[in-house]
Length: 144
Length: 142
Image (cartoon, rainbow over all chains, first blue to last red; front, side, top):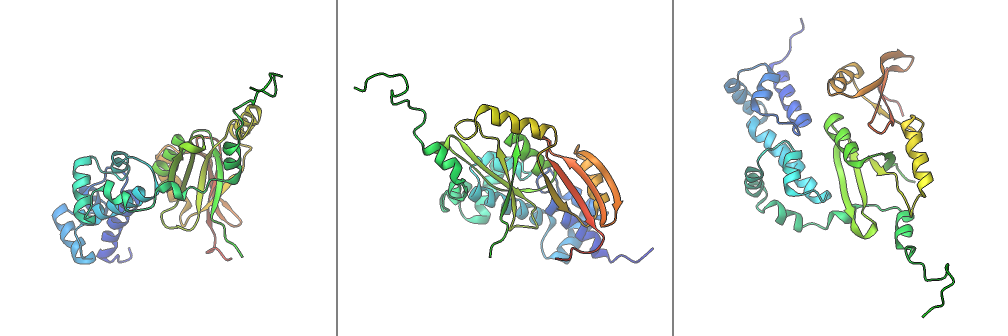
């Protein structure tokens, strides 16, 4: 069998965090992907990548949550769950510690996500037209 | 000149499509906003995390005033019959992706098979849209 550098197993765990952060993944799962015990894995991961696996996974989730706060109108709770976190309280705490402002305050510092909607002209035309009114022209009634 | 930014797919249900493209396929939500002033028009785009300059617009089939009821129903039924277009995806490892997606309950039409250009497979999204997943024999030459 070809020699596999030990860091290759650590990279597998890192890739797992990047790819599957939206699932309820934790450091144990990452250690499993690397085939190492949890304590040994955490030490080796930090040595290879300069931060703990816990921090790596959490910052991946927070980075995605920040993007969703900027680009969607999803609620803070929905965003928390959709990045694989399970407690809105600890999400808000981690987010605030990392970004210096709460998720809601962070969102408010950016232009509204609705600015990003490239609403096709055909949709705008259709909804801008006053077509739900009849103007009383089609039933022969005299105007007021 | 120009570049391709978004390609649009009709979907039967945007929530269902969003869950499929993110939770099952593993794409990211790019933009998701609902505009009350446009009859609750919802602009919803997704794309692969590693490829940020292009996304797929998951568009609800409009009803009146955009499409009359008959047109709406015709589009719906053509999609359900699999007669509405295809998205072509590329991967480095078709068989591994096939196993991963199948394990998540994705409905495959063609299991991976050798073709002159590589290994090819295909599956459907919940609306019936056809999606091919291809591993090219050589790195894509443009």
